[in-house]
Length: 407
Image (cartoon, rainbow, N blue to C red; front, side, top):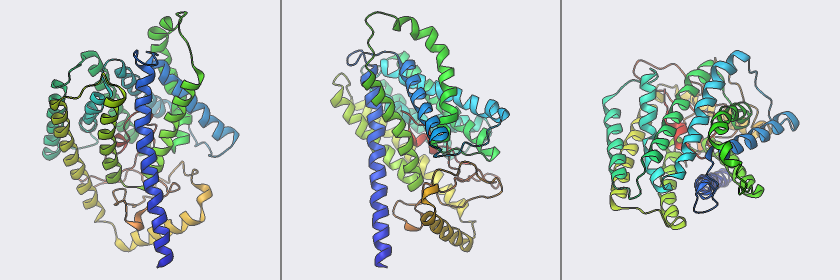
C-alpha cells in the first residue's frame, strides 16, 4: 500500500505539472502572437505569414522525427484517404488559424477569449447539421444561454470592431467544421493520429492552403524595404506553438475531459486578466464580465450534460471486463514506455472502454501516452458515446474544443 501511495502521489504531481505547462503554454502562445502581430508592439501585421511559419516549422520537426530519427513510424496513408480526409481537414484547420490570428489585429485578447465561448455552440450546430448529433432541447437552451452571454459581452466591449469579430467568429466556425470532419472522415475509418503524425500529414497541406491567400494579401506588402525579419522571435514563437501541441496531447492523455475543461476555464480567466496588464489598451467593462459569466454558465451546464450522458453510456459496460482491461493497460504502461508514440492506427474491431471523463485523482483511470485512443463506437438510438479526438494540432486554438464532440 505504501508503494502504491508513493506511485499515485508521483502520478498526481506529474499530472499537475502537465496541467501547469499546458496552461502556461496556451496562455503564452496567445499573448506572444498578439505581441508579434500588434502594430503597437513588434509590429508584424501579417497573420497568414506567422501561421505559415508555424506550419513549416511543425511539419519540418515532424518530418525529422519520423524520417530521420524514426521516433514514430508513418501510418499507411493511401492517396484516397489523403485526398478525401486529410485535405479537407487541413483546409479548415488552415482557415481557423488564419482567421483566428487575423482577429488579433483588430480586437483585444480579452474579447477574443470571450468570443471563444461560442465554440461549443458552433460545434453543436455543425454536428447537428451534419447529422452526427441529435438536436436536443436541453442542449439547445444551453447554447442559447451561451450566445446571449456573448452578445451581452460584445455590447459591453469598448473597442468593438466588426471586422475583427467577423474574423474570430469565422475562425470558430472553421474550427468546429474541422473537429466534426475529424470524427466523420478519419475516425469512422478507424484511423487515428498522434501529434507527430498529425503534424507530418496535416501541417504541409495547411501550408499549401495558406500560400494562396498569403500570395494575394500579404506578399505585396512584405516587399516593402522597411520590413525586418527577426529570426529568434519567429523561431521561439513557432517553438512555443509546437510545444503547445505536444503539451495538449500529454494533458489529454493523463487527465479526463472534466479536468481539461476546468483548466480551460481557469486559463481563460487568467488570460483575460494578464492581457489587460500586458496590453494596457485592452479595457474590460462590467458588461464584459457579466456577459462572459453568463456565457460560461451555459458552457458549464453544457459540459455537465455531456459528462452525464457519457457516464450513463458507460454504465452499460461490463464491470469485470473493464477491470481486466484496466489491469492489462496498467501492466502494458509499465512494460512499454519506450513505445508510447507508436500507436498510430487502432484496430477497427477493438473498442477501448477507458473513461475519458475520469476524475483527476481517480488512480485506476490515469491515462498514459501509449494508450490507444478510443474509436467512435456504435451507440444506442439517441445516446451519446464518447470519442477522443486524436488530431490535436491546437496551435493557438482552444484545447477545450478538441473535446467538444461526443458521439
